Length: 210
Image 1 (tube, rainbow, N blue to C red):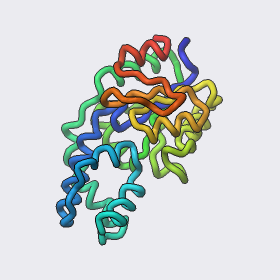
Image 2 (cartoon, one colour):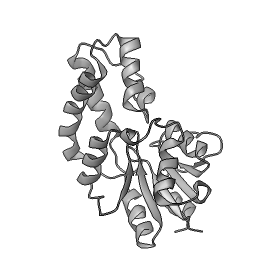
Image 3 (cartoon, rainbow, N blue to C red):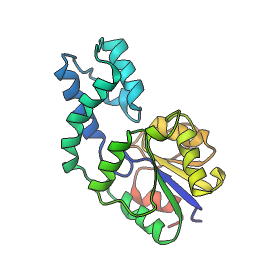
């Protein structure tokens, strides 16, 4: 049965932007004389900008204040957006749900300027579209607030909504919000307890009753 609302993570779920974020972060670190660790990808996947900055500051002795650091990182990221691609099958499902009248929103831990740049690049913009960025909430994922904000804007009971995310922090946020949570990682892995784990757009369609 198709749910009343579906709330989508952006980076890694709707768009294949995680490699771009990682490349930008590595370039920004090296530009200020820091050496990226081998497990950088696993440590920053789905994590908002401020906790990543705290890691850079506390573990790698980054000297820049946050405002300077994030501008520096985005200067590396934004030129890469021209090469951004949608995640195979995801936007097709989004558009099919939209045609059926299902309420939807994009719920991201990224900054507003990154959300807007990414969605514009893959053509996923239309009047009245609901998007929640890290700028729009007090607490980012894994807290429930971003997904609860989406439910509020869509005027839907969280219990009647589905959250779709590719990261553990995002899936934990969906679960904390009381939503059916679909964990669609970039590569097969176990998900948080309570999440529905899938590995393809076909499985996603089945879970959404399409």
